[in-house]
Length: 198
Length: 198
Image 1 (cartoon, chains in turn yellow, green):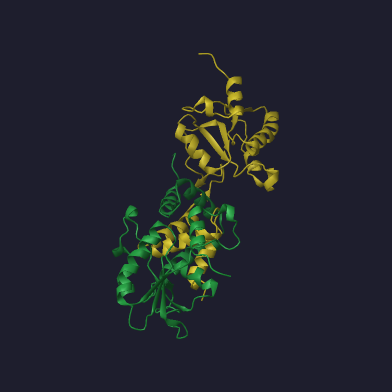
Image 2 (tube, helix red, strand yellow):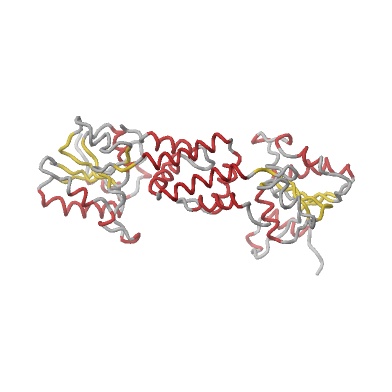
């Protein structure tokens, strides 16, 4: 009798499969869910099932979407001469919030990481290459500014440049609103290197 | 277009209701769930629904259970003269694992905490008092050894002692396998105070 009732044990087991959820967190979440109202529990379960059922990847840019092609790829007002390459679907939303970019996107779904066993063949790179028709003038590599993101950008630049397409990368520099004293030295170095005249 | 597709936004919103799950975690979990197989997602949703449907509280001790009364309360081999009072259902499992206690349990579902606005009326205290018939000789107050747990134990002791029932509390002392140097001074003080002859 020193075990949980079966449905509880099963719920804990299922929750433990989620990223960042260990046995303790799974236990806490289970208790919480059992304490929720019938309606709340039903809403949660339905939300999970519906998201899985209705969300797919856009067959062109691999962004999450309900319709294929996604609202970006099917929007005629977007600039089709520039493609912004990002690692994850959420990166698209981050860039959209700036309202500074009006081209198309391409989501790689990860970055090259030999340590985690992720190679170029695990990313949507072949699909990116097949999109680079004559109308594409620029590819903006907006992968993360860390080791994996830089490696992925380098790898892609080497593939795309020979096609005569302009390949760009986001500027490095001081985060807006930051404090010079607390900015790491690499960022500070890049910010100095890329200084602009006022 | 700087928002998630609706089913995704809804899933994130539902997940954010869970304890310890902020927007970032909810987003990460959502991506993961969408990437899971149909079967895995179905298993997760079913586990949540079934746990909620099949798990109830024992009407006597308020432990989580599939059958009411729970296996503890309906087991004739358990010692009915002693009731161990704990804060949470998981505490019952922790005590069972010691194999040292063979009485009945009572789960309060929390501890008195004025800061969090939890008073005695929010706990299963009335239900505990109504269980204290003539056959009960001892109540072991196994609430947590922290401010809230101690306050709850004091409160209960004051209610139960006048009934002529023995009220006990777990011994304080050095954790087994611990290092004297790293044990906090309050625990060390209690361990010295409660020293036993060998």
